[in-house]
Image 1 (tube, protein in one colour):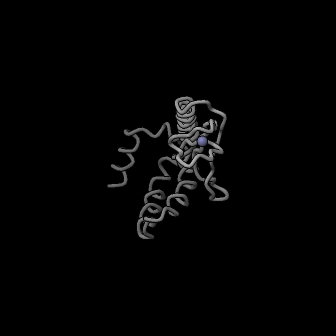
Image 2 (cartoon, helix red, strand yellow; image 1 turned 60 degrees about the vertical axis):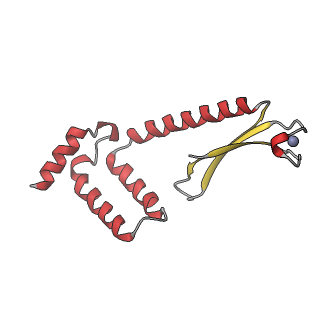
Image 3 (cartoon, helix red, strand yellow; image 1 turned 135 degrees about the horizontal axis):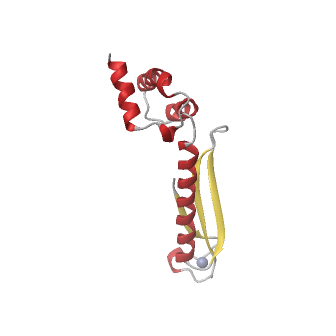
Length: 135
Ligand SMILES: [Zn+2]
């Protein structure tokens, strides 16, 4: 998740020494839309100072992280894996062979975790599944 702050509508030649009094704004990447595959962004403007805009931006980033965390941990393993693999596959540096391995691993783990929520997949359960698979 990335973003930056800037003076919205500033026309000064030297942005760092702004004298026009433009208000501060932020623009933050909030992730990829799973349906359209497009980057989603959130902007807000009208902040008087750099400190204000940076505080607001980091609060938002924190909230989004928490939200995402809650959303993900309450998903079932099966749902998460189905949604995650295509997103993972689209990342530029993932080789087709790696994707096949991941798919293979998911399929192996599905019988153990499919209907469990992610938050309930503990290290112990994971280890048990691995031990079981080894046999
Ligand atoms: Zn300016």
